[in-house]
Image (cartoon, rainbow, N blue to C red):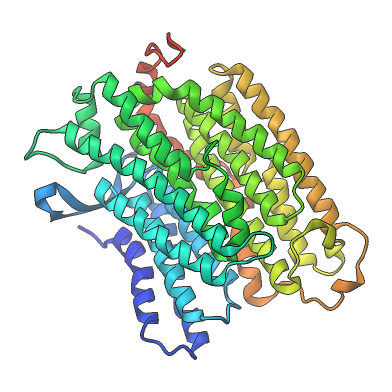
Amino acid sequence: MGFPILSTVLLVPLAAALLLCFLPREARDMIRQTAALAMLLAFGLTLYAYISYDTALGGMQFTEEIPWITDLGVSYALGVDGISLPMLLLTDVIGLASVFSSWRIEHRTKEFFVLLLVLISGVTGTFIARDLFIFLLCYEVVVIPIYIMVLIWGSTKRVAKEYAGMKLTIFLLMGSAFMLVGVVALYLTAYPAGERTFDIAALVRASQMGSFSAEFQIFAFLLLLLGFGSLLSMFPFHSWSPDGYAGAPTAVSMIHAGVLKKIGGYGLIRLGLVVLPLGAKFWAPLIAGLAMINVLYAAYIALVQKDLKYIIGYSSVSHMGYVLLGFAALNVVSVTGAVANMVAHGIMASLFFSQIGYIYERTHLRSIPELAGLAHHLPRLTVGFMLAGLASVGLPGLIEFVPEFTIFVGTLDVYPVFAVLAIAGIVFTALYILRMLAKVLFGPRSERFVGFPDERGVDLVPLILLGVFLVGFGIFPELLMGVIRSGVTPLEPLLKGLAAVPTMLGGGF
């Protein structure tokens, strides 16, 4: 076995968090620098893995496996393929950006960065785990830091941070409860006692050997849909998302919108689709219908919002509708688009929240009527806002265009009406995003913002880092789509075999 890249990426933030516990509270600069160095190392190794990944070979690479709890069939098993590797890159890009977005935190700095690093490490583990026990362990690690960070460093601008934190946590725990029941059902059903395992590849083989009946798959997939759907802010489990973002500090909003929410979509593909394909096909029309509610309802609500975080919060719910629609179409093109859209939205949403966080830090304002003409005073921030906003509406040359177009192409033959409605949803997106940009950035010059400093130094790191990926993957989409395609293409025989399988509406596609 070579150098354990994935273990290093997973454990370096944890090691840094442990080191921070022994540093004095007064050493704020050293605390920030330690957190930044840890994330720079993790990001560098992830970028190396991304560049080195052999798309022609495909499959799991950079694998590691150590038996852990042998009586339960649990192993410390890590690996990445064309689906999980872009998610890992997304995690470390946003994780590094979130550290620099939090650079000016003065209140309980040590505790903040300890919790932030633990949060990033937990999210990392969910994407690289090849064992469901490790997946669940990492996911549960994520929930507690989020609640504490919202409670201590959150905002009470529109909603009480206590309410936002509790609502967010309850929805996440509710989702994990459904998820846990579904996972335990898989564990007990796949193999007889003495042979049971949490290994995802082994569960896939059990599914292929017919260990899961159609009835069981339908039931178990519904449990996973409720669990992962809650995390993905699928209607009607979406209401925690805008409130949670509004009450959360900037770093938590960036990670939650950018990465954590994507665990839901990743889990539906990695576990729901591959292990329970008959269940995925059965519930596909329901998922497509709920996806359209996500797209149109959330976009409509975003139109009437005044708070910047609520606008991006509802926009996030709307964009997750496109991910769900791509998944529901159940073909290689649509699923590829769904995975790519998760990456694209993550970069875009994180850039939005980082810029909103900077505005709020300097002005303590987030309401559109109170903000106007910022472009006159803050040109660098304006660039960040414009990049994120134009990416959100799917402007060609930016990261969102190709993934959304791919979803529409993959969905049009399967759900033509829904595909047309989804395309119409872009019009709503353009309305609320362009209106926000016009009023906040290009309104009349306001003297109240004279003298407010523009982004510089460490403040520019999130803009530059996220902007490079937002533009880079937009101009060179194959850098992203090629890797994802290598992970989704092996599913083609499975997806084609589902064509004749009945759905909840009967018949096949």
